[in-house]
Image 1 (cartoon, rainbow, N blue to C red):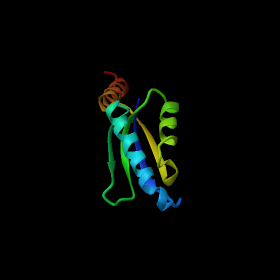
Image 2 (cartoon, rainbow, N blue to C red; image 1 turned 120 degrees about the vertical axis):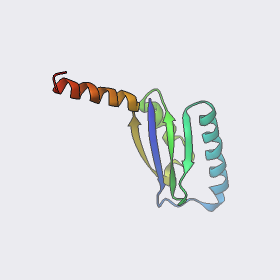
Image 3 (cartoon, rainbow, N blue to C red; image 1 turned 45 degrees about the vertical axis):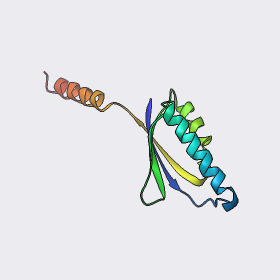
Image 4 (cartoon, rainbow, N blue to C red; image 1 turned 30 degrees about the horizontal axis):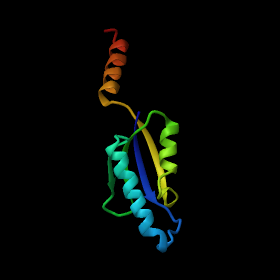
Length: 103
């Protein structure tokens, strides 16, 4: 399953003495997830407040685990949107409309 994940900095203070280690751990975790195909892409927003990820997981629970295990988890608010293939959705809409039209 594919997911759009958004994240935005929250007000939890990050201890400055831990910042470099946390950022390095997050960078490594992201690099591994990209290499293993668990993420398609990961972007920080230009406003420096957050970013987006296209992620892949076998289940909602697998995705949950990946998010809460992320080294920067507690410093961000997270949004998750399950995605489906656009062509699948459009094909279904065409089918529904054609049925309603009696075609």
